[in-house]
Image 1 (cartoon, one colour):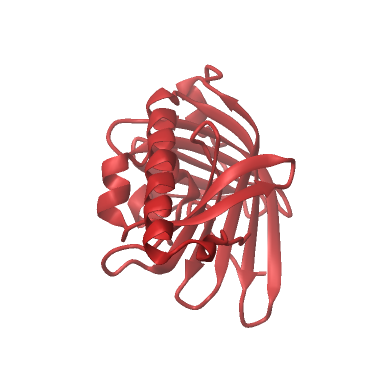
Image 2 (cartoon, one colour):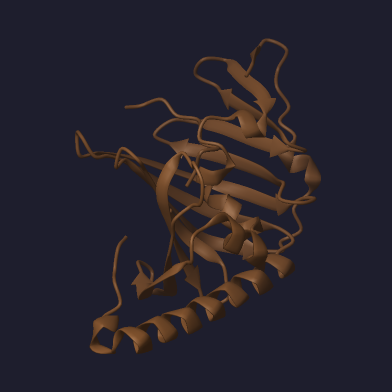
Length: 233
């Protein structure tokens, strides 16, 4: 199993049968759907003050065709600008805790009795691969960070959640090839998939979501025992 730093989170494949329309009609229809989905995402971003959710992550290795699966829960609270406060608790296959607050991260690995600390932007994978980034990305940021978004169709995820499926190809020299986002009817990105240039991918799914549940800011500060070894990233 590969070692990983879970801040590099990231987002099931289905294509709409738009070929039944002429290319002009298909492009116009896709553009209309994309605008509608982005508007929903923007309304969700503006109204989202906090989030508590169960998180499932699958990391796929294209060479070995192996999947590593992780289960935990996440607390999320937007902050100034594009920053966000995050607490990610992995429960399986191992226990780890990641907190991000005021642009600083702490990653605690109990089995090693070690904690890694540093600037969030320096974490391997960066913000671009973080699935939660899409929760705090404005309409303007989506349009400036990616090529014209591609509408992939409507899809029902496991659990019966209806979503609109978008593909996002980053502009410039991003570390990954493309991302996919599944957005529910409220504008919440409930599933994301990030595909690396190597073909490896990370898919993240949020379920059991509680929006605006009144999370205390203290939840994003990780208190460690004096015996924990601190390693600066």
